[in-house]
Image (cartoon, rainbow, N blue to C red; front, side, top):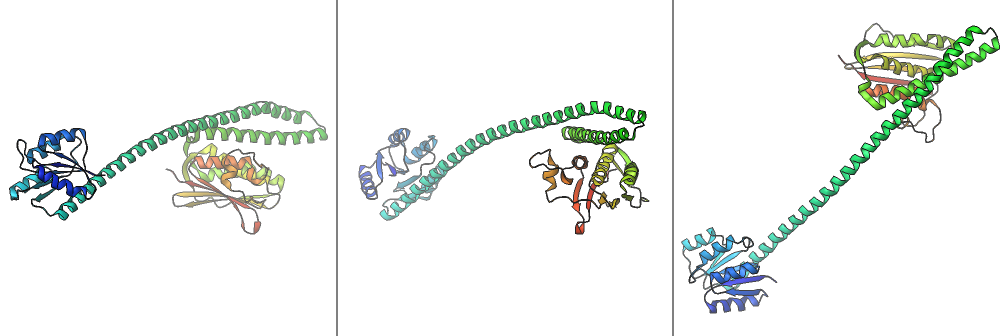
Length: 387
């Protein structure tokens, strides 16, 4: 129930107002002077004050000014209800903080309507303030929760980074432990080939040599993957190189294998040089890795390398007539070492995994495409030209 404070030195006026306001269920308190009004306001709260001007001692103007100085009373609407109707008094009343001004004798319906309006406005303002305080409280709570969640996420991210580092260090360790005995095996196999004249032993030695070479390539790829995943672009040693020369050297390296497998290995016209800044060794490794994969999965036909320059980019395309890529998505296949449902096929080839990481570390992209009508694959590097 809204509370109204009546401030008037005339008891009859207070009685008249109290009877009127009781009809609309306002709770009424009264004060016969300004000091009494201030005493009420220091211990109680009100929704509206009806204030007379002409009172002995502290008049209505001084009382209004004192009320507005009280910390908890600044927002209480003060309606001046007085017999004075001069412009100067009305103006002064509003300057001191009054919200309305009625002269005596007053119209009862008009007075009730104005009181109702100001009471509702005060209650609405208080609701807005309460809502704002609630919102501020909720924001603080949510902010605290978000900070806690962010802290937990940072901890989880740090843990993931540590796990990733541990995984790569483990991979490096395994690769190193494999490569060390392999070097001894490779040397021993080479020695056997030169010492033995027995065809059967030489045949077994050749098979052993091929297996060891394959295991050595796998170990090298695993080691490179570990370094690139661990250091990223920090692993790169950029230098200005001729892409055509790199591609030609890679192709020349595989010519004996092409002859052995009776596959045609060719390269497009290299008359136009493409010069850029890349890591020579890593890009050579990426190209060789894809060529290696093509030889592994191509039994007949050809393998062709095509180099093209397009504006600020260049592409290296390796096409073959071998088995196709499966429908598995490349980001799943090459994102990480994942043993779930792992089957060795073209998509899970370690050489392609290594090529993918090398190209992405250089800021490029790699596409794994099947040619039309199922006649082989097309693996495409796209890299930016850098001066």
